Length: 118
Image 1: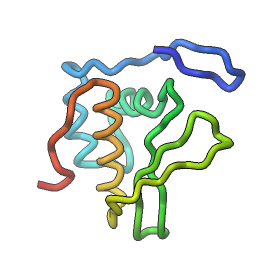
Image 2: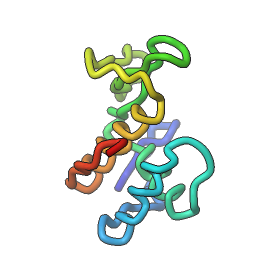
Image 3: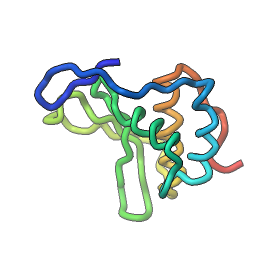
């Protein structure tokens, strides 16, 4: 997997997600999306935060400590962030869970059908 570095050159990404091996970290993230994580989950999150296309799924705070939405950061950072019209989250943890689910699907092709709270 290549990612674009600051200078414009392509670099190889050191980590990859192996769905069979890394599926164990899904529940860990679901239980605690914010805070300290195990080294394995940190590796998965680091991988998820690097999108070689530049179209990164992000959280957008609509109202501090109250409302969040998902957005897409464009490949060219001088372009505006595209904010989705819905859903609007009233829990940062639930919003982080949705970002995790979408990034997992993008990187593995697998859907996580588990809601944040069941």
